Image 1 (cartoon, rainbow, N blue to C red):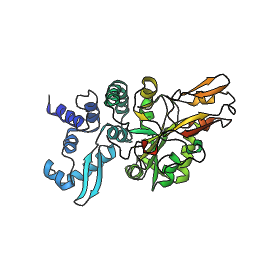
Image 2 (cartoon, helix red, strand yellow):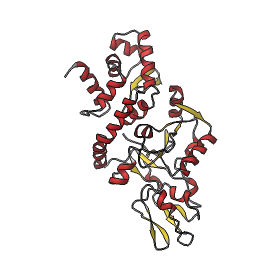
Image 3 (cartoon, one colour):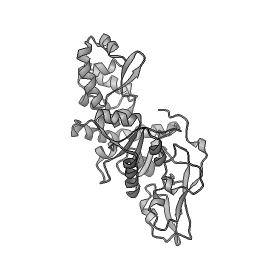
Image 4 (cartoon, helix red, strand yellow):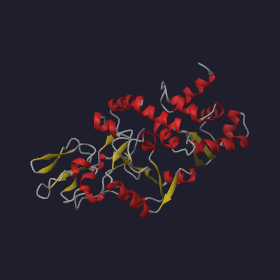
Length: 334
């Protein structure tokens, strides 16, 4: 193994993907050898990195700035000064680097190749591990049964209302997969993630009114809101389709537990249902079917997103609470 090859293998191992065929190639496409060595010297302050690499702080400044813009380096204020670290895991590596504005098409194509070849095997291992999913569905609050208590971190609207700052970025999955014509600039970033996107130049700031308008657009188009699986405001509201998303096809077509449902489930009022089958067409989880002269919910498939309810012309569907409040984990583990 050459020294250059070993550098990128080490970077792959750093994010928990030892043995991957394509992850080292992705690192090599976006970081030269000098940058790879700097990444492997992290975490550390600029002085610590200077000591480890033998470079001056003046030499490191432009390198760190470029790696930040590429999505490979993150920084945070600490008592000892600004600490620089490389991306922690596959999700950070994927989402941050794909949004780099100068990313070549070959880089995006290789990411999609990874998602179609290696990711399903990793997803299968995650599914079999019994680990709680990293993401969960967040329901449309307009669809929730009247009188139900809704938690501050439970619906997309509440996420936005409670956010300190907001931004929107392109959907990384849609950017690489290009399998549909759903909106590209649709991922809503919150608080620290919003600040990061704006500072890096990969997103633009939103007012709360603009963010709510984006939610409405996503709902009209039948996209499913998802966020981190934890009891608290998340960093992002993804608006997912069933074809480009790195998770949805594996959930829908193969039954992998990579996404937790919301605490709710759809319920149809047969007396109000006009059998138009709009809900059947809109449900990406295939959880709606026709029974005699009305729609019926397939309980085991329903993820409680509310897309069926928002599209129902006769308002015959609403979301009812079927899981306790502590169903949502207090902390998210990756």
